[in-house]
Amino acid sequence: MILVKTNLGVSKIEGIGLFANEDIKKGTIVIKNNDNFGIAKYFEEQWKQMEKELSKESFRQIKKYAYKDKQDGLHCLCLDDTRFINHSKNPNIKTIGDNDVAVRDIEKGEEILIDYTVFCANEDLENEKYLKIDK
Image (tube, rainbow, N blue to C red):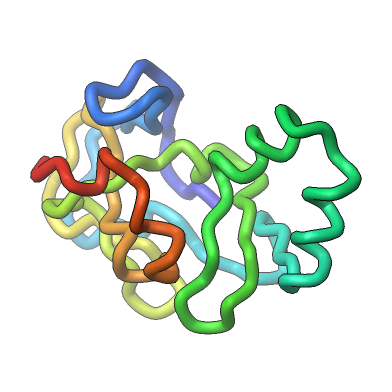
């Protein structure tokens, strides 16, 4: 659940990005992560069944914004705009406990970025060309 004002925009990194719509101070909780709200989680069997039942294009759209969790191996799809947060090796938010916290001041209009390698299973990251960009 996003706790600060944000908006979607064109990302210089990849497609659509999530941008701060207010100045965010270092240490501010930007996102409250809650497994019971805001994230759909799928076991491998459910994921494969969804792939069989949906059209190729529909599943491609879902897969584009989903990730496989490094800890529990479940396929996760954020149901709010957090699914548009792009990757950076120099992120401005970081997961601390159940929260994603600003690691430095973030200016209004700046894209909110996180390091995917912290929570995504490696097989989800191998073919993502934008992860190799040092931003």
